[in-house]
Image (spheres, rainbow, N blue to C red):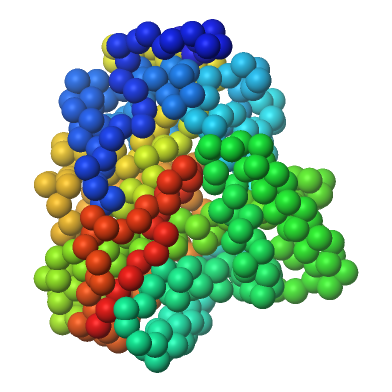
Length: 402
């Protein structure tokens, strides 16, 4: 397993082939469910023609995210099986010998900047940003592209202030961030990633001379080489806005695809925290999943994952696991969240920016329909145009009216 077919040879395999087809932009492919019922951990054929283990069951996803025998690096990265041509998540990353210590060091460094206490203190400012952007949007004549005028600028404003990145540079790094997600042209994606890293490096050098109360200033002062710092900063800038933009777009689409959801938040904005957790559970702008590599043989019931083999952890499938979530494919605005979703990962791979995302999303969905109680989609859900060939997926635009 994990060996690539000979170049030019037809792939002959009875393994399930990724990506699985979807019936609509808000749906997760039913093939995840069907495969999970047969084998929660199953061998599949990836987009690149390699083989991997697909993990789609909720408990197995949590178990393996917490398993230190899995990592992002590989001892032979050039020959390692790949999930896709993505330069970010398609294959191995990091140094095999130092991955664990580096990960622990980075999390320890960044934990204060993204702590629940600091995010709580930030909440008032985020609310001001939400109010200001919605005020600007209200001055426009509908239909309005919510993606361009609200979903994108809000997370960018927040992450720019937190990191210490000039907001005026947003068009520049927006273009680079989009280029990094290109899965059809790895060379172009790699060039965009390198350019964003160089951009962050320049900012880090400036922070050393003129430090401020921001994350890049903290990074500039850490004991690490500039390449490592710059790559980490680029990753934070990318992840700190791209995923939240999509969650706003998808959340609005879920809530407006059945106006009873919207009306529930109009009547009771205190439902926003529950609605946010349901949006996080349901949203699946990308099918890609999280790639890991076994550092040792791992035996799980009747499955043995051999050292060096690829493991694709599908959090979107786990969040639709019918053994955990009642009617998992139905959006329930006030769903009981006693069984937590895994949209932010789990254990030591729980997203460090989860608190920040929740602060933003709660402000958005506690306010949006108070300001626009009659908001509707300006086009049917089926006509929303998806981003294609991009790692993070999402919509090109989200036209709304009121």
